[in-house]
Length: 306
Ligand SMILES: O=C(O)CCC(=O)C(=O)O
Ligand SMILES: [Fe+2]
Image (cartoon, rainbow, N blue to C red; front, side, top):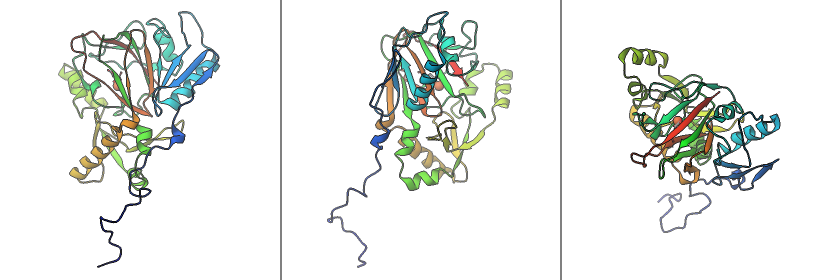
């Protein structure tokens, strides 16, 4: 019998026989303070809770505060602002602190007020694609950097928004697997789960929308242009297949990626309250809503920010 066979009655070295774990150096445990603003971690891995920031109508925010919040967003992946920090009339100003808002609504998510904001309104919205894991607009050539939501009406129970840190999920990969995934490209298709087909009730508008968003080739591992951090890019709403692999293998690779993205270590569950505000970096996290609030009212104003 060959001497390199290892019998099961021999012990396994724990050092080499278990999946990788997150490097504790990447954990965020210490609160950060700047002037009156305090940010504490939402989970040890992802998200920050911002307290002591308030944006009232007509007020200005200093460049230093803006830069502090911007850098925190790049670090934490999402920031939650406690109720009262921002209100419905200052939400648009809030979104300008992080970049340039652009209108990204559709007949299902109509414009709110005067500016570029749109709304997710449980009384109007028929499509449930926001309850499938995704990165906003990942099927478009220049997807937005950030998305912000402001709760005009939070449901009394349920209706959370949940996140997975797709940069931390990448760090859970075996290095050999990570090195292979780094070389692969995927096709993202905006209509993979019917988002486009269901958003446009008229054939003409649908045709136009489809023409504008053909399937797109993108890297399976995306590098954050501002931080250089790698993100697992495939999301359940848009990822169609991995290029260069047989169909079944492609499906399995996507399943493996989705499995890593569902690791409890990298997940965060955010519960809404009236007046709360949330902003996330789509180049770090994936997100989805949770549809467990029945017929309750849930109205979130939404800004798409470049
Ligand atoms: O409904 C939610 O919680 C998620 C909303 C969402 O996907 C978005 O605003 O981009
Ligand atoms: Fe979204």
